Image (cartoon, rainbow, N blue to C red; front, side, top):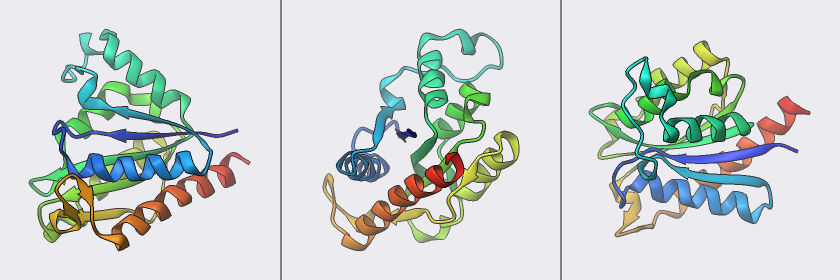
Length: 175
């Protein structure tokens, strides 16, 4: 049986990407698949220094959680036309734990101009770790949210589609 993971990579506790991740996680739970949630802001992760950071207990916990998953949804904010540094740091800390995973993306940004910002991150996962990236991802701006809730039903449906595609792709590749 495949195992799934939703990772929130925002340091902001009121993050729109975190809200998106929670929607995906709830959808996967409702579908009764084996799924975990991890929020990197709760882990006190070190910055990757290419040396001592890998022995850090939080980095080890994150690595083991990623290793255990077959399919992963990354919920990430977009800052300055790129996926957040915290999201990149997560990969740098956990490296080979990403090998052969199925990956989906949920991204929240301030504006529409950074729509393709996830591609460099996705390319790194594909080329460095042979991940299969779902060709559907969700990109939402602040207009999709009302306070601490997702208000845009189309975005909500797209998040559910990504979660369903994660399960479909993972089952097909692991079957």
